[in-house]
Amino acid sequence: MTLLGMPAVPARPRKPLGDGSISFTPGHHFALAGTSTDHVGELAAASHAPLSVIVQVTKRCDFDCSFCSETLQMKDPSLEQLKVMATNLAGVHRVFLSGGEPLLRRDLSEVVDVFDGFIIGLPTNATRGMDLAPELAGRIEFANIGFDGPREIFRRVRGDYDKVLSGVQAFHRAGIPISFSAVVLRSTLHGLPYLVQIADVLGAGKVKLILPLRKGNALDLPEHEFITVEEATDHFHRLVELRTTHDWAPAVRMTPWTERTEGHMIVIEPNGNTNAWPVYDRPDLWLPLGNILQEPITALWERYPYKENHYAKYLGSSILTQDRAIR
Figure (cartoon, rainbow, N blue to C red):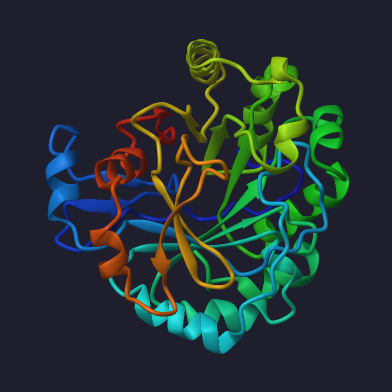
């Protein structure tokens, strides 16, 4: 059902990858061809590159979110540097063109061209969606929009709700599939059902829930804002019950920080430094792997110690999941 006079974005079929054992779904996540996840470790051990990496195309941002971990500034990579990164990322399926806020790059359209051939996800706050969504139509797989709940919650932890909502609608009008991503604090738990309902109304394929990490602005969060894994699991299951009751369509996923999710992300900074993230016993939560401007991802992957965690997370076996409803 489509509301607010917004056009429906056609559902995309699953996209088989490599030998077909893994696909990319309309819910904007990876999935195994079968239902069993028993062989995730074998897949990871046999792999030569990650499923997904995050490339920070800028550190700049026009918001100052209370939970943001990425507060240190750094010069934007040039297009030539990004071309080297793209070449050295051969073998990776999905690239998140992230930040900071990637829409602040005036040459973002050219940046997207550099990574043509990858599944491109765009994590964004959507504040410049009105300007840039038409340029990105048909060129990115989806926009992953930071959206934490209804207006009061959103304004308190992130910023201008109405500006972001206008950007979300711009992406939708441009035919770009959207997902929502929210950092879960104790003071925002009550808003999670409203968040999923908003995502349903706006046609989001997925709602991704993440617990905060103690870095950057989040170091100033009161201790009571950090919920336990047990609390997160309990609230997730309540949310799943409500989703079933109300027939909300978006897939819902929650990532708690456990031993099985440690280091699962591979983050490339603007200067090419490539890190496993989050690694709990490191002061900055980064584990340096090398520099993608100097080595191919296959070489960095060989020294990456979290291969099974990477595959388990992105294939949904180490996190809390409920898939997109089929209508």
